Image (tube, rainbow, N blue to C red; front, side, top):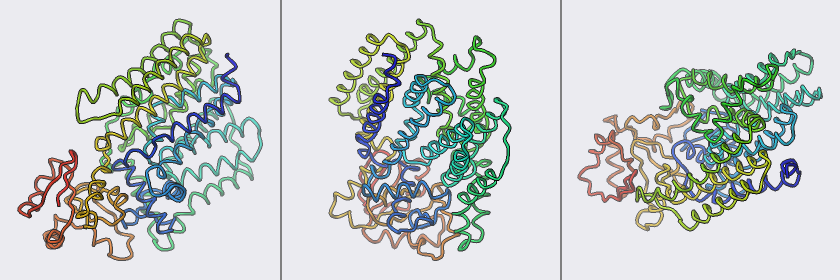
Length: 544
């Protein structure tokens, strides 16, 4: 039975099951605000305009990040239409590629095919990984390319084939087109630490110079093309979109130093104890350089990104590779009693997640679920866990099976929750569906009060007008606009001169969306005594 993990057909079956499972219900919940809807709308505008070099968001140039993620999203729309499935499809493909790369990297570092397969399955069960592929951002694509760069570097050191060097530099160039220079931190940390720990001399040759030129060409191509029309683009990209994001409290994402120290353990919860046991195993040989490499990379990434002012948990997503490899090492070293205890914990977490899902609507009636499907998932999970726990005598195979189950529970469980509770995951699809369903509303202009809401335009297929009352999301950078057409859809109601524009808008039949927030109370007085009807969607109020 042990050989099942290294059976080629078993691996193909696992990858197929994961991929098909990730696609089930992928488009059944609405785009979430603000990040996902922003990426989705930019990709849509790109696909419609055919301009794949100049991203726009609600008609305003959006050069905050390189365009590769938007281009991939636009391709998804070309294949599947302008919908949530098309927006999210390629992230599921990225997940499969990541699982293959984790397996291959583990083979090169751990020298054990069975352990490498276990590391890949553990990787699939890490909550942080699955979060990254269910919500459209750059993170899943960046993580995939970082894994490619690490794999290419290790293959180069094992085979000495110069092709891997060129592929390594090309992957660095692609990272630049996904995230910019910040994304290079991950492969650089790995390369330097790997060279130091294994005492590898990094030699520069003609091929290194040529590879560096490939990297620079791929990295600079987009910015250089834009400089022709926007001479200050390089300064803008380096200063405002890189340095200021690191140093300043940009986009309301400033977090304390300890942010990752608290959130990371929760985001890798099933493997926290195996990770700690592996990292601080006093009985391991002092010459275990691979273990040192994994621990150092994990710690350095957390430390360096903790120093940045701007923080989101997905910013350190690449640590998932090192978590999965360390956990796989730990399982191999567990005693029978430790193995049994940890497998019970992993099994219990799968069941507990589903029980929480089932009782959530009982605790708070605003939530809803398809109970038949949740019951079916719970029963299927319980039966699968029972068979694995009682039929598998090998701990590696047991943990591999439990990892698959936990990952599938998170995939299906989250889908069942999201599709019935879109308002509470910050989606406004139910609001736009209400507007679309009303003959008297669907053709009216739509105005959004003090919040940038790209998904409104995405779902209603028309421009929307945004009222600016100082919220950080509505501050648009219009320095690169060649005309003033954008002004028709942006009204600064803090400016008394533009209040007349607001009056003229509200004198016609419109639909007004207002987010239920305490800081909106003052500006809402502008809409009093206008005879507007209201529909309450909990987080959003619709006036017409």
